[in-house]
Image (cartoon, rainbow, N blue to C red):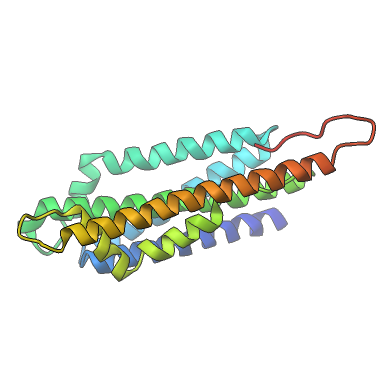
Amino acid sequence: MVAVFAFLGMLLLSLVVALLAALQLGDFFRASEEFVPILTVIAIFAAAVIVVFAIAYAMATRVRAINVIAAALSLLALALVALPSLVERIAERASNPFTAGVENASITLELLVPLLLVVLVQWGLVRRRWLRAAGEEDLSRWPWVTTVVAGLLILNPFGLALVSSALQRSASDFMWPYFAGLTAAAAGALVVMAAVECYIRGRILRRRLAASLPSAGGAAPASP
């Protein structure tokens, strides 16, 4: 029963994160009637993912299996969004039929970002719980701090407007070099921040594993 409530909490937390991202993107792209099926797809996907992770949690003998399943689920999210029929069906509900190309692109982002966040959040929580249950070190090399900072910087009206302005180049837009330069600088800073965080996390993990080595010289299992 404890495990059931734990996985239910993981599902709810991943849904909160994904829906917050979807709402920000939907508000920026001025989503209308098509937003309801987008939220429905996100909810169904999140429920299916937690079931897969629960099965993996119960059957996995190494944490690497959970990592592989998370990668496979991310590819599944990409495949779902790449299906033209899904995006076009959702776009049919849009109120403005004269902007189908733009709506298809916005719907793709409104789906893809939340679906990937669902996988990321659930993977991190399931992996941590599995390692703790196995008595292994649960520190991850994934740059969680950078991920949160990137989400806060991008998934807000100003951040989305900046990225959109940088990607939509126009010959008459004399401000484009400024927007592009600022976006590139922010992306570079996030990449450097992620690299530094991964390095720090790696060093901390190695120290913890070294400290847990038995005095007889045996090796403690490493956590990927």
